[in-house]
Image (cartoon, rainbow, N blue to C red; front, side, top):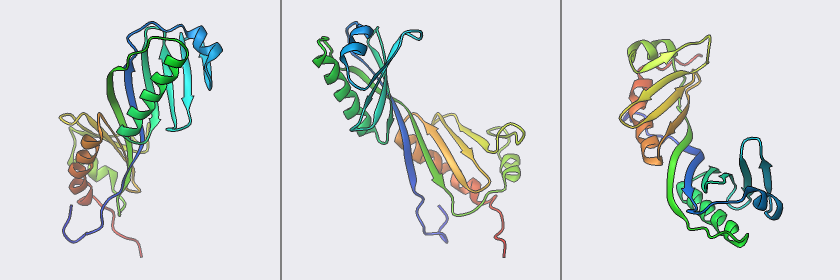
Length: 187
């Protein structure tokens, strides 16, 4: 970060996607008939189950694979996944919670300045791309972190990465590049 600018950037995690396995076959029809807060999608071959605390939505397949979305932290995602496994146990399935993994983290961050996207893209050409006809943001991909940053001209960032640490590191890496391409303040 720049030494003349002491304010800290708030990185707000908006969604954590996690997967886990139950190590048993699940009868989707039974879950749909006996479970609570359930939406059965037979044409896709899955059941959606929602939990209120923590607020997550789970996609459940008959193979026992479950994807949880909507958590706002990695700990909340794990708690929600374990609660979901407990709900399935109460429905009579021999569920064993295994192979839990956070697969994606989505976060937003706002720079204290606006960004000139054309300059930003020219300065970082192989990594950054900007197609204003297709999307209003420039895309900046950091391969070693497996993170993608969408940079808007207002200074807002949308960051996706495999975990919270990579998301924070990606914002730290892109900040100096954005700082040198900031728009001058209008008076």
